[in-house]
Image (tube, rainbow over all chains, first blue to last red; front, side):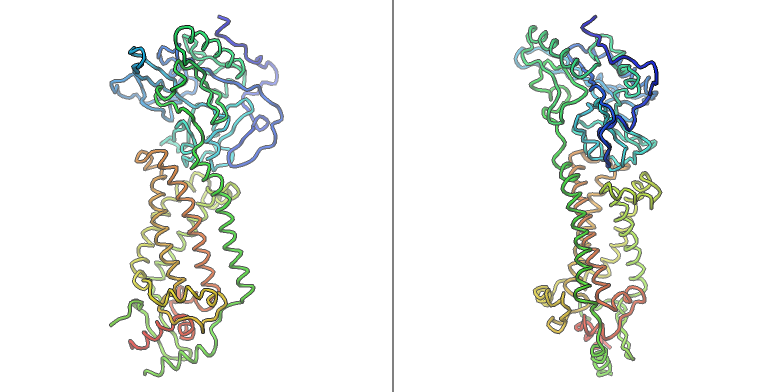
Length: 315
Length: 221
């Protein structure tokens, strides 16, 4: 079992902090944070798609740990249930029936979808509410619901289309990477529940090593393009996939090939923000200066006399 | 025949000074509802536009309420402005003298009215403000509906919403700049604000700034 289990940083036994705080933040939405007081070891969840049997134990564990109650849905004729992520379902299995054009084999691709915990999180970049989205020094991107205003900007910022807004409390929800478990030295609930160890959790370095061994194994079994999905466009992610067809991630229910924060979002949250404030400020200042230089534009006595002559002249 | 720029209620009253009715009570109420909405929209919008202005959410009872109220204010403004549009569009049609007026913007800015052509109820600057507001409000309501996720999230894709939110921000910045021009002009040109408070201006004001309109009103009597 040594191949499957990784030794997490030892669980604290004294001064147990059950939550991460200010001292662990590296980024905070719509605000800045001082350099973190301590550097946590970067963590990662590795999802080995080739080992997944689609049992949905992870979905169940997620619902249970986070105390959520996904509404009972309908059978849509496919295995996906619910059909999409919801404010109650932070993770869903996405099933794809794919015919490999080379082997003509039907391959059943099953991908556990959910927040990727980007190193460069688009949600955090887009969020206008100070502190509603935070990133900890171990890589976890978390939502602080007390500060969330429900605007949905995080959805526009996310390159993976992950956050969902609750119609009940108008707040955004997504996978927390079980930050409340990780904070006390536990792995995420989904990894704990996975019967085939398709989901493993540890430090990011360990997970990369583990992935390497898995990729080597897959390659020896004929999957020449097996590889790790840790997309550099978003600075890498703290949820990674081992894919048997890493050259075409889009076959796994549209996993983006080269995800990055949309240039539209970059423009909106970059240039527009500063140029917009500058433009409005410039108009106000120019007005003020103009008034100081030219003085008020007053109606003269002559104007009034002319008006009187005009208005009276036609009586 | 009534001139294109004479609106209902416009009237000259000889006296000392001459007074001119410029806006009816209805037009003024319509204007101030629109103005109130525009200011509240700007404040609530700016709160979400730049982190340094997030504190403005306090005016609306916090971030959640700001997010919830902003689009409704936009709906009120849209219909209120539609009222203004119906009242004012005809008098804001572009005329030959407007081009001349615009070409002499330097004289406008240095208050050399003697060098400007006689203009009707609205000068070219006011017309530019009117049409900019009209177009920008349409852009803002359309892009705003696309990003009103509480009710309309499912009707567009995330990619469409990204464009919409960028366009919404750009249009909002532009309309705030237009609004600054509008308010500044009303303050700089003394005697203007009375038109929207009491509904009247003096004959001298009309003579100085809208002589063609004044002549039409005198001719009408």
